[in-house]
Length: 361
Image (cartoon, rainbow, N blue to C red):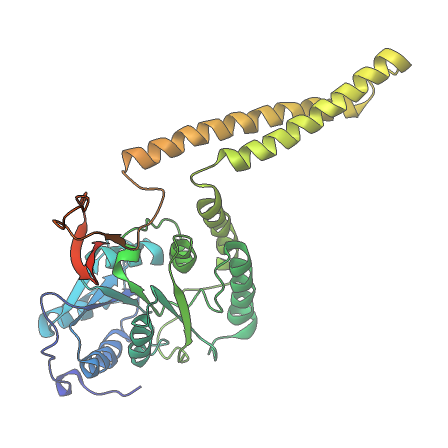
């Protein structure tokens, strides 16, 4: 990476009120990295020649990052600063950046100078081939093997196998998204690393490109081995959201039926042994197991029914659909014999061959 002073990089005429590309950068105590990172980003985006903006999200920094960001905002065009009240975590910071982004394409990267802004052009070009997400892959990762790289590889394998969205590097923040895919997401906890899997479940087309990765030069890493446990717990949530969010009774009910059936078989067997053989039941722990499994089975069935009711309340109260629309093709409005177009909120009309296409925005 070059270290050009910011005043040596001319302001770009491509920074406009309606940017095409929004770059979201979450920051937590990165005071030494902000200005060098912005210098590299500005140079790269100007070379691309497309309207752009950058959204810095200060996630409760306490080392002076806030003052540096205020200085950049005052000096530079196209800089947006979102300051959170405290440290909410990377998922919340990225969500805040997504909500303030105005571009049709949203690019995320870390603020520690380990991601290379020059890779953005390649990701955006790949996105133009018809993909909805292009994920960076740190093929030559510059981190410690046992505490960072190895746990990451295990987590990536586990996430890929569980979700069915296969990526080499879920943990790489450098990714390019179509903004309409992100607007459908609601992120909680530490779910930012699962974004490709979540939108992949909605039919998103996903690609992966190797990207550069540099050793950390300033500051201290905020990641550790403890995050592996959180990944596993979040993965359980993601699996449920992808597979059973709209049909929870199918998982709770299945467990409940298996438990109830097993318990009933055990109790029936003991009853037969008592009536026809004369076995005593008081000293047999198998009776307790049978009763326990039957009770647990009923509880799981009730839980599944309650979850079904809650799921319907969730979708209906939030007006959240159980599907995701990529495009709607209908006969051209006003053509003889054509059906009228039923517009919904957030739809726009554009020419498409002999008819029109209705896009969700």
